[in-house]
Length: 566
Image 1 (cartoon, helix red, strand yellow):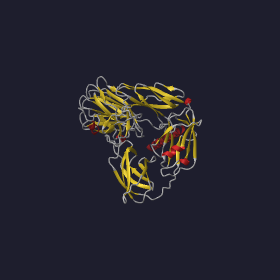
Image 2 (tube, one colour):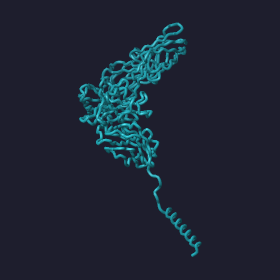
Image 3 (tube, rainbow, N blue to C red):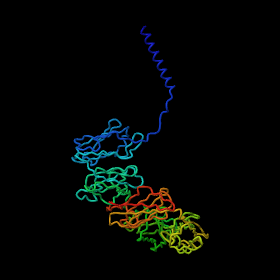
Image 4 (cartoon, rainbow, N blue to C red):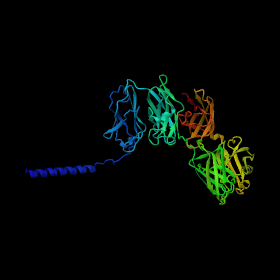
């Protein structure tokens, strides 16, 4: 056979094979491409040195190998080593799955080290680690065994760190945040943290929501979780559990006054840079700069719709310049104006044409399942004359027997009537408000209508209660606070306070699933104190009952106990 015929034959065979292959591909039924999306974060396949290795000498690098390709950019600020090597380290990749941490200097002898990869690391599909990766090893013959664990509480706890500062030679409080911590870790997706392989010593633990990722605490920018005590690890006590931290944002700056402006001839608005409140030392004066006459101030309150505004209700103003002075204002955390504020504004001759009216009230008309501790609350658009309101309102039981009580004048636009005793169980009530007798501070009426509104309280058979005991081995702690919060309505709280060691009872709790918390009221002010850093002050101890608590109707949920034994 000639060479030409051999070539043609070979080409023909190749064509036949190609056609058969294409037909076979068309004939075979295959599953569609794709599949469920990848939602699994990277997993560690191996680490060098091996975790818990001892007597590690002359280490040039550490290595972590993942089971899939990792997004290299996600490692920014997500790899750290504690204690920190003096010369730091650099990151190098072998392919897309193997990370090498190159050391610049030799390590300390007889020292336990922890290499940590943070939860911000993710694969190329965006799946982040659910918990930090920790590689412990020692350059000496043994690993340190100290452990501290607990939980960090607060909104949006993703990427929150827990720092452990070790006190050496009486390290002053002020030096802590100027130096990096000897140990640190990140919380997991549920807020839990585990500090392991700690050397013996006294530690101060902080949680840090580091907004600018500089690994330092920035006052008023970062959120901080302050401990309730220091921890000492030694041969008699090598671990602490349930060491919980609550995130808060410290505010140490007094409010700043922005401006003053007259809305009409009766109303002046003073604006600040943050929500404010009126203190017991509040004083304000307004003087006509031309005549020196004083402009009387009838009333002042914080605007409930905009808490950074202070509303000043005055006598009739003139269209002239008023000089004002103000003191006794603080922000909501208690930082007061540091000095007397002086301001000026142009008064308004524009008539106050806002008609006084009742905006809202509670309980609502025909509302059911009203709590026994409920107050009758009103919202007016103008400050009300208190005596005219008291004379025009009466609360009745369903049998028309009047209910005695007292008025709470937190605000003349938002007054509350509180019955002298708890409302009765499963009972109807109604109140009458004759608006024809109610006047504002300027003698204007709120209308001539008679409001009659009915409501009823919870039926006893629909409620349960929670009981338990709060104990502590610290004889200096005397008082405690226990709070039950329904998962369906987290703005509601059922709270009781009492003596440590005695049984507590939270009564009148609607059926449902609750989270129950307890705190030690160290300063006995009736609320949880988150502590402070400047000056340093410990927070109050706080714990969450480990399980959800189910409350059933006509049933006492017992055994919701807390033990603060540290």
